Length: 156
Image (cartoon, rainbow, N blue to C red; front, side, top):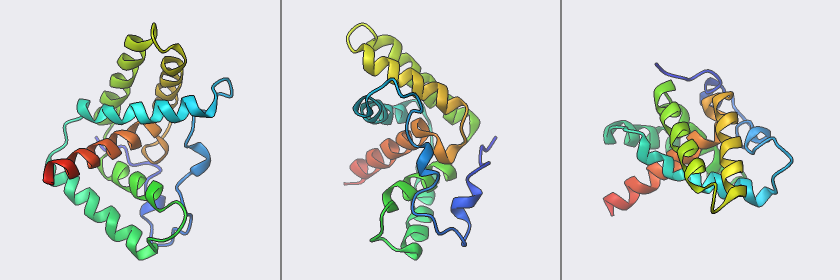
């Protein structure tokens, strides 16, 4: 089942914002330093390994996002974030997002003894992920960035 609520705005031809829901793109808890949230988001990129997406579907999402961002201008603030959200929205299903979230939760549990601040930030992101739509789900968007990077490496 597709989880596209909230994604229609960034696919709309009338969209003028530079980054979709940019105020929702970080952990809302103020108890974590900003660097812990950034590191947690980077760690979440590995969640792509828990998600099975056919190469043809991934390529179609990347092409659609590239065409959309090119129309709005490639040399503007937030273009990379918008492209990542577009790919994420195109690929989002409830099952895929849940698999990515579960991967992050397991990473947090496994790393709690060695990196407790990172583990706490990952768990916070996982909780927020469950309550957000695909276009502002930081775990899902980072997993899609990981997928895109992996596909690029495989083609080179």
